[in-house]
Amino acid sequence: MKRGQEFARFQSILNDTTTIILHQRNTKINESVRLVDRRSKVRITPELFKLFPKTDPINLPNGKRYRSCAVVGNSGSLRDSGCGKNIDKHDYVIRCNMAPLKPFKVDAGMKNDYVSMNPSILRTR
Image (cartoon, rainbow, N blue to C red; front, side, top):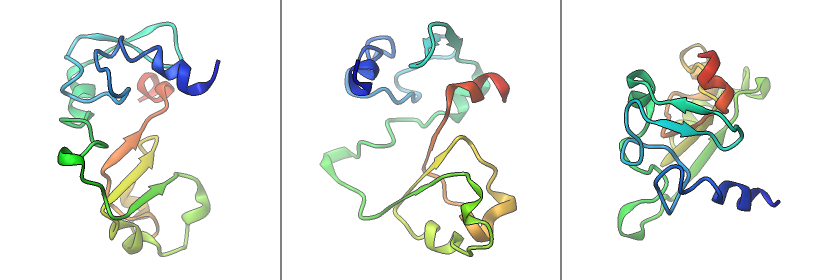
């Protein structure tokens, strides 16, 4: 099965027909949500719910688009790069797996508009 088809199977589970991004408008505290790569469900705790964006962070109202975007991974490739200010200048910054920012501010920046999260992080953090 193609990856897009696999993700599409889970849209109804998330009660959202347009996206599979969890946010505060399409989830509830204490709700159990099936993660895309798991058969088991994860309960949305109040602490986890607070981490979710209030609305879908990707789709802007009125069909507007961001002018620039930075996608920042959490590998060591940015160490000693001094790229932090350039990353933070973008209109929208996407980060991966809840990497710590303060210790790497000069190299990776601090702006954080959207964080992707591997489902295993929910269990370990």
